[in-house]
Image 1 (tube, rainbow, N blue to C red):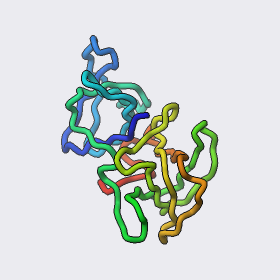
Image 2: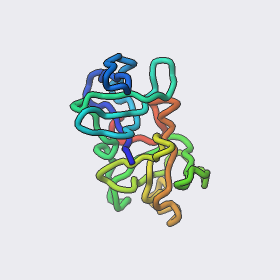
Image 3: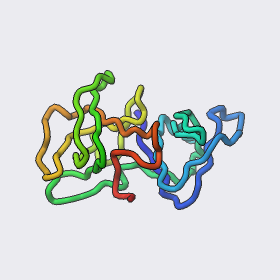
Image 4: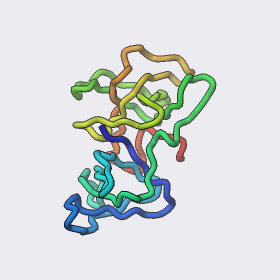
Amino acid sequence: MGYLGINMSGSSIPVYSTNIEDNTRIGSLGYKERFAVTSSGPIAIVIKFVNSSGSWVDGRLDPDADISDWCEYLFRSSAIPAGYFRTDSTVRMYDSSGSFQASYPAGTVVVPYTESRSQNGTSHTDYLRIRALYDRNGNQISDDTYGMFIDCRIRYNSGNTPVYGNWN
């Protein structure tokens, strides 16, 4: 399982072809642009990102690329017992098989499955694995959300996702 990433470096990060022998630059990640890390290792970080044509494609970053995990930018409040993300439009929840479960309105608070890593889906790499959901008043919505996934819709707009952290 990978994680959801964001470029908070303050500068553009080059993205290369996934073929390690072909160092062709296929795009870049702008400041605050979101993407999905599908694997990382000592040679490369493999990602899914939105290219300049608006397509959700595979790419590769240098292993020393200055990227951040979404969980480095969690909101905190005494009303919610864990770090969380906010939403500014309707979000959709799916189970681990990718089946739709429910929709939640803007203002829903999303608690990631773990605060140390924003785990994403294997088949749906721009889905965020969650622990819990709360309404805007801090009331837990349901116990049936543990281990479910929220569609962050990075594949449609990597600069403005309905789920966001404390980077705005």
